[in-house]
Image 1 (tube, rainbow, N blue to C red):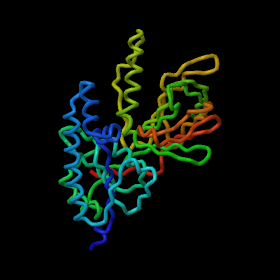
Image 2 (image 1 turned 180 degrees about the vertical axis):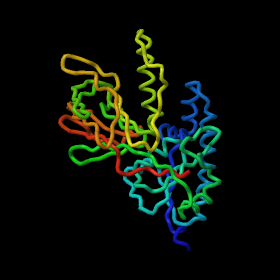
Image 3 (image 1 turned 45 degrees about the vertical axis):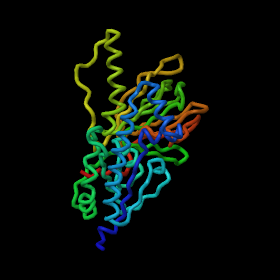
Length: 311
């Protein structure tokens, strides 16, 4: 066996919508009743399940031929230790690629689209049938990769969290986020619904919706806005972009430091004034979070490690 073929492949999977319904309602009949009672098409859930299972079988066949491999559910990512030589495959939607990448340290990551007719798959360039040949090329370093800049939050107690798309800093529930925010020499006391810090990859997602909504509201109240179209940042750009959601000015809080760039030379710093419920999570994974309560300071900057997406 060649050294290239001895590299372990980790296949990351996720539960389908139907599997999540079964976990909640226990039987197929109860799941069907719930969906159809809402007027939705239960057949679409079944079709997604069948397509995913077929793709998973194809991927498993390729991995069985490969040799050393492991299948990992997305829920176990926060506690899994990847080897430096691992090749990682994410079988799912674009979000699964982002959820996986932030736990890696430069290992090559392949995004596999389980159902191209359903998912556009910006981060999913491969189909399951091509997995065997692609793995052979990746193992021999004969496949190009695209670098992806990641964000990192570092707390004053040493805890860290990385993000491929974006970090959210704010309350766990529908309440006001209270914090001090500093960028360079500018410092403000703020009250808002939270702060988003987006990478280049994330600049086409949550951040774009925040900016688009802000511009639409500004126009709706009769204020002029720039006619320039919103421009996302390149995936490998050495900068992040932050935006404050719904800042609320009061006698003791300001709302001018609400948008800007974060670089290696100029990180973003926040100090929590929330007695409880303050959190930091990334890429929509709310269950995996850092507590950000009163007195804790978070420094937001570029992660030293970049993601490596196989093309």
